[in-house]
Image 1 (cartoon, helix red, strand yellow):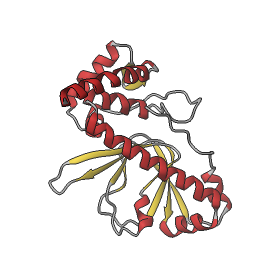
Image 2 (cartoon, helix red, strand yellow):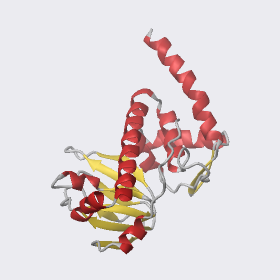
Image 3 (cartoon, one colour):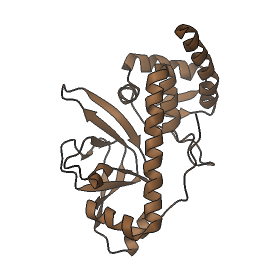
Length: 231
């Protein structure tokens, strides 16, 4: 797992306070919908505090978790591309403070404030890199390794250097939908990780640094097995 080094931090709240911009901040409880698939795409959201999950529902009614995002991240960016409707549903996973920015406001800030434009671009590039990594993960890794990687990401491993891992509050159904497997498989691997001392799991998941070593040590073995199978 490669570490991503974020660009310089940027005070989004300070920018919004200093400039005459149209924005609103809302308090959300756990499991509240921020925006729903099919809603008008007329704004971008900035997560000030808390975590949210992004889900999509297919025409056949199957739901999938496509992302989990936390503080200092944006969601609903598709609004600035001109898409008329939301393509996904955003739901809170904890108590949250979320800022709503009208599309015109975001576009104006991108043109007028270079620091904000750089920060937003770094956010989009990071998002693109993670989507590509997730695709590779789905194509080539086992469900066990996908779960281990998801837990590392949720606990903030591989982000800013110096940040301590944070406890993760997420249920097994969400993890199963995130990595594309069943809840029973997630339960099996979570128990295995706990027995190996990789996590503590009691309401919240505490991911230990040993999990990173587990992933790094197991991946070469899996790749070797795959090469043998292909030959």
